[in-house]
Image (cartoon, rainbow, N blue to C red):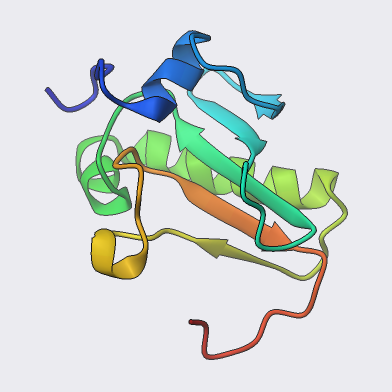
Length: 117
């Protein structure tokens, strides 16, 4: 069920403390941790503690938590001193989503080209 922890979800296991992660920030509704395969000097994932498969489903069900994720992404960028940064939500395998728990990638610390990909 949406919003509830999923036994087979890596990010739910990180939220529960069952899988280790390098946590850089945590709030009542979010956790931010370093990506294990960084694509930039700063690459932090910000996730809601509640399980939703993608950003759109989170925003539809819990707009306040979706806002928390975005606010925390900005806080992570500031904490990491990434004045220029990108916040990315991938949705679906074709877009590169590999963990189906909403997460924002905060990328910075190097030039980021446009268009991406």
